[in-house]
Length: 168
Image 1 (spheres, rainbow, N blue to C red):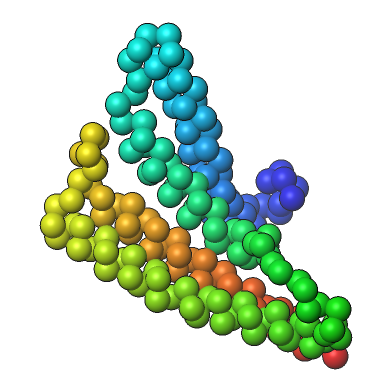
Image 2: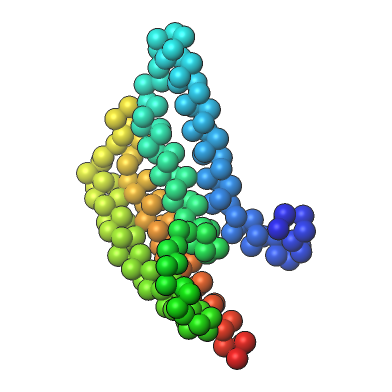
Protein backbone atom coordinates (compact mmCIF):
# COMPACT_ATOMS: atom_id res chain seq x y z
CA UNK A 1 0.00 0.00 0.00
CA UNK A 2 1.51 3.37 -1.01
CA UNK A 3 2.12 5.88 1.82
CA UNK A 4 -0.47 8.34 0.52
CA UNK A 5 -3.26 5.76 0.93
CA UNK A 6 -2.34 5.08 4.57
CA UNK A 7 -4.56 6.97 7.06
CA UNK A 8 -2.80 9.90 8.74
CA UNK A 9 -2.89 8.25 12.18
CA UNK A 10 -1.00 5.21 10.84
CA UNK A 11 1.63 7.02 8.73
CA UNK A 12 4.25 7.11 11.47
CA UNK A 13 4.03 3.33 11.93
CA UNK A 14 3.99 2.77 8.17
CA UNK A 15 7.19 4.78 7.74
CA UNK A 16 8.83 3.15 10.76
CA UNK A 17 7.86 -0.32 9.52
CA UNK A 18 9.16 0.29 5.98
CA UNK A 19 12.26 2.34 6.84
CA UNK A 20 14.60 -0.69 6.92
CA UNK A 21 13.37 -1.76 3.48
CA UNK A 22 14.00 1.71 2.10
CA UNK A 23 17.46 1.66 3.69
CA UNK A 24 18.15 -1.67 1.97
CA UNK A 25 17.06 -0.19 -1.36
CA UNK A 26 19.23 2.89 -0.82
CA UNK A 27 22.32 0.82 0.01
CA UNK A 28 21.65 -1.45 -2.94
CA UNK A 29 21.64 1.64 -5.16
CA UNK A 30 24.88 2.84 -3.54
CA UNK A 31 26.41 -0.58 -4.13
CA UNK A 32 25.38 -0.47 -7.76
CA UNK A 33 26.83 3.01 -8.29
CA UNK A 34 30.04 2.12 -6.47
CA UNK A 35 30.49 -1.07 -8.50
CA UNK A 36 29.89 0.81 -11.74
CA UNK A 37 32.39 3.51 -10.77
CA UNK A 38 34.91 0.89 -9.67
CA UNK A 39 34.68 -0.95 -13.00
CA UNK A 40 35.04 2.29 -15.00
CA UNK A 41 37.96 3.50 -12.88
CA UNK A 42 39.63 0.10 -13.03
CA UNK A 43 39.20 -0.37 -16.77
CA UNK A 44 39.69 3.14 -18.13
CA UNK A 45 42.15 4.64 -15.67
CA UNK A 46 43.73 1.59 -14.04
CA UNK A 47 42.84 3.15 -10.69
CA UNK A 48 40.18 1.11 -8.82
CA UNK A 49 38.41 2.19 -5.66
CA UNK A 50 40.67 0.75 -2.96
CA UNK A 51 37.96 0.24 -0.38
CA UNK A 52 35.41 -1.24 -2.80
CA UNK A 53 35.69 -4.76 -1.36
CA UNK A 54 35.28 -3.46 2.17
CA UNK A 55 32.31 -1.28 1.23
CA UNK A 56 30.73 -4.17 -0.68
CA UNK A 57 30.87 -6.34 2.45
CA UNK A 58 29.39 -3.60 4.61
CA UNK A 59 26.66 -2.72 2.10
CA UNK A 60 25.73 -6.39 1.63
CA UNK A 61 25.35 -6.84 5.39
CA UNK A 62 23.15 -3.75 5.57
CA UNK A 63 21.06 -4.84 2.58
CA UNK A 64 20.47 -8.39 3.79
CA UNK A 65 19.88 -7.76 7.47
CA UNK A 66 17.75 -4.63 7.07
CA UNK A 67 15.41 -6.44 4.68
CA UNK A 68 15.22 -9.64 6.76
CA UNK A 69 12.54 -8.57 9.30
CA UNK A 70 10.14 -7.40 6.56
CA UNK A 71 10.73 -10.52 4.47
CA UNK A 72 10.08 -12.69 7.52
CA UNK A 73 6.96 -10.78 8.56
CA UNK A 74 5.44 -11.00 5.08
CA UNK A 75 6.41 -14.67 4.71
CA UNK A 76 8.41 -13.97 1.56
CA UNK A 77 11.24 -16.24 2.68
CA UNK A 78 11.99 -19.49 0.86
CA UNK A 79 9.70 -22.31 1.92
CA UNK A 80 9.84 -25.95 0.93
CA UNK A 81 6.26 -27.17 0.67
CA UNK A 82 6.71 -30.82 -0.27
CA UNK A 83 4.36 -32.04 2.47
CA UNK A 84 1.64 -29.39 2.09
CA UNK A 85 -0.79 -31.62 0.18
CA UNK A 86 -0.83 -34.06 3.12
CA UNK A 87 -1.99 -31.49 5.67
CA UNK A 88 -5.57 -30.23 5.95
CA UNK A 89 -5.77 -26.40 5.94
CA UNK A 90 -6.42 -26.03 9.69
CA UNK A 91 -3.52 -28.32 10.63
CA UNK A 92 -1.28 -26.55 8.09
CA UNK A 93 -2.12 -23.23 9.73
CA UNK A 94 -1.14 -24.56 13.16
CA UNK A 95 1.98 -26.20 11.72
CA UNK A 96 3.08 -22.98 10.02
CA UNK A 97 2.41 -20.95 13.18
CA UNK A 98 4.45 -23.32 15.32
CA UNK A 99 7.29 -23.29 12.78
CA UNK A 100 7.29 -19.47 12.71
CA UNK A 101 7.44 -19.22 16.50
CA UNK A 102 10.12 -21.92 16.63
CA UNK A 103 12.23 -20.13 13.99
CA UNK A 104 11.87 -16.86 15.88
CA UNK A 105 12.98 -18.45 19.12
CA UNK A 106 15.92 -20.13 17.36
CA UNK A 107 17.09 -16.78 15.98
CA UNK A 108 17.53 -15.33 19.45
CA UNK A 109 20.78 -17.26 20.00
CA UNK A 110 22.57 -16.10 16.81
CA UNK A 111 21.40 -12.54 17.49
CA UNK A 112 22.82 -12.70 20.99
CA UNK A 113 26.10 -14.15 19.69
CA UNK A 114 26.36 -11.38 17.08
CA UNK A 115 25.88 -8.83 19.84
CA UNK A 116 28.63 -10.49 21.89
CA UNK A 117 30.99 -10.53 18.90
CA UNK A 118 30.24 -6.87 18.20
CA UNK A 119 30.91 -6.05 21.82
CA UNK A 120 34.20 -7.96 21.69
CA UNK A 121 35.19 -6.05 18.54
CA UNK A 122 34.40 -2.81 20.38
CA UNK A 123 36.55 -3.81 23.36
CA UNK A 124 39.46 -4.80 21.12
CA UNK A 125 39.11 -1.65 19.02
CA UNK A 126 38.79 -3.60 15.76
CA UNK A 127 38.47 -1.42 12.67
CA UNK A 128 38.07 -2.14 8.97
CA UNK A 129 41.17 -2.38 6.82
CA UNK A 130 40.94 0.67 4.51
CA UNK A 131 38.39 3.04 5.96
CA UNK A 132 39.21 2.22 9.59
CA UNK A 133 35.53 2.15 10.56
CA UNK A 134 34.80 0.50 13.92
CA UNK A 135 33.66 -3.06 13.23
CA UNK A 136 31.36 -3.27 16.23
CA UNK A 137 28.80 -1.03 14.51
CA UNK A 138 28.09 -3.63 11.85
CA UNK A 139 28.08 -6.39 14.48
CA UNK A 140 25.52 -4.51 16.53
CA UNK A 141 23.51 -3.74 13.38
CA UNK A 142 23.39 -7.44 12.47
CA UNK A 143 22.45 -8.37 16.04
CA UNK A 144 19.62 -5.81 16.28
CA UNK A 145 18.12 -6.78 12.94
CA UNK A 146 18.41 -10.48 13.76
CA UNK A 147 16.52 -9.76 17.00
CA UNK A 148 13.91 -7.86 14.96
CA UNK A 149 13.65 -10.82 12.58
CA UNK A 150 13.15 -13.16 15.53
CA UNK A 151 10.40 -10.86 16.79
CA UNK A 152 8.82 -10.75 13.33
CA UNK A 153 8.73 -14.55 13.17
CA UNK A 154 7.22 -14.89 16.64
CA UNK A 155 4.67 -12.13 16.00
CA UNK A 156 3.72 -13.69 12.67
CA UNK A 157 3.23 -17.11 14.24
CA UNK A 158 1.17 -15.78 17.15
CA UNK A 159 -0.89 -13.52 14.87
CA UNK A 160 -1.62 -16.43 12.60
CA UNK A 161 -2.79 -18.52 15.57
CA UNK A 162 -5.14 -15.76 16.75
CA UNK A 163 -6.51 -15.39 13.24
CA UNK A 164 -7.18 -19.12 13.13
CA UNK A 165 -9.05 -18.89 16.46
CA UNK A 166 -11.35 -16.18 15.04
CA UNK A 167 -12.22 -18.39 12.07
CA UNK A 168 -13.49 -21.22 14.27
